[in-house]
Length: 87
Image (cartoon, rainbow, N blue to C red):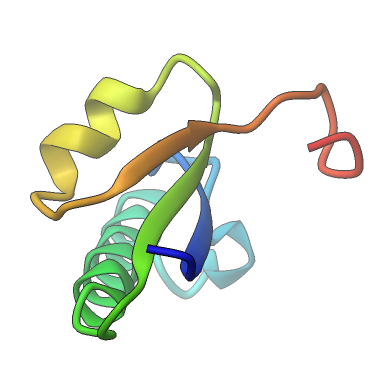
């Protein structure tokens, strides 16, 4: 399959995602919203025909968390680097 669609995501850890929504959301609510957005985005991406969907995730040791969260046929690619610019 020559085509790829890459989704870039960081682990849905409370206090580390969607923090600009706090307030009015709590950090737990913001994390749940992020989790829902991620699941919906990946589910939608997996409906695109003739595309290998890949998830470029960070931190590099969070693959198990993403595999448990996303029951889809994905290729998992850990991001490398210490900063967003390096990744």
